[in-house]
Length: 180
Image (cartoon, rainbow, N blue to C red; front, side, top):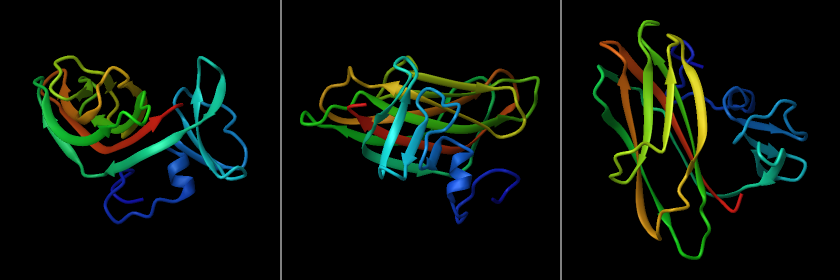
């Protein structure tokens, strides 16, 4: 692990390092799962996602996965688009959710760092992540996309802060899942 806790290009991503974030790898389920947590079940050789409402691990149908570990920063209260990712909804596939995970921090505990996720050109965020921590903080959530029609879509990551502080985003991890 390089860069004082941040992943950087060239770092080896081991099972133990991933387990510190959202993807748990093992033959038995994590003892204290969180909603949306991913678990690769090595005994059944499949990816599962934890559904809090059902208190159950469901088999995930993974359609796409991308990781962008480039570091971006922004200063001030205006939202600034920093990253985008495109995905396709096909009428033959049921995609209800996209799991988005981010790692972020604020340059000062006096400010709140924000990362917001938008679909296409929408003006309302589908997910908001925030922290007042000056240390790298991981957060993740399912983003409901069940209302989007078949076609090509874009997820947009925008950053801002509650004051003249800096929001730093290290990792944007996106997993397009369906049928879970």
